[in-house]
Image 1: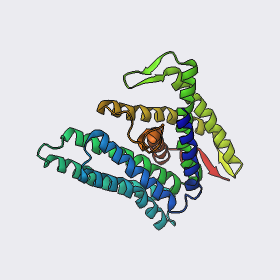
Image 2: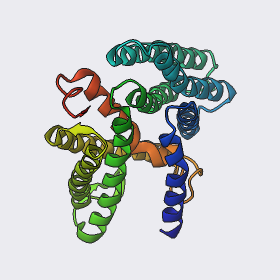
Image 3: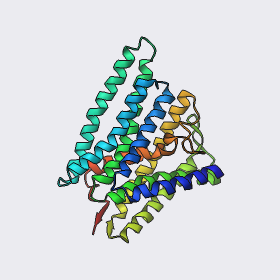
Length: 290
């Protein structure tokens, strides 16, 4: 526990300056590093991490945040919704090329790489990369980017933290013991409720800086995304259990690798981005600048 707390404090101290100066290229470079390392961890977990897979996987993931920032910089005169659709279209195109490259290489590997494992690796690599590029879209391609880029972290990490403490205090019923033996229903519910409350506090703080927050919309998004962040956590735990590993990496002592620490944020950021882009009323309904 002591190691986890120290790591969390240090990690927060390191990340905060990148977010404060997220208008600079330091931010997309950080996201590119995390995305590339996350995909490498996934490929290594599944066992398809030879030089070809590693190079193409890391390059694909790390390229996406850089590309997203280029699109944002090049289209500053366009409306935000146009920019995020351009980024997602470019992501889809490069993802198709990446998946085809993975599968074709596996097909000609003369049995050295299982096509099923290669397919799983390709699917999860695209998922991880999309989760991280969603952070870039939230920061650059919505009018209240400062608000939205922090939102997945607030929802995910408060859910995770309070699910742990609520589970310790009140946990009696196992959630999905085959996937994550320590998680409980009480912890999950407690984490979700605390996350919604603290997300509303987060929204209130932003009203002090000239933002107009719709608390009902924000609570609804927090409720759904808190649940989905836990699904993201469980999904990554399922993959680890399937391939018999404890942690994806060792970058964060006491926490594991990038995918161990950002597992819930990947699906949470992706979900928030999806709601803003495609669910009517959400884009203008959560927050606006007075």
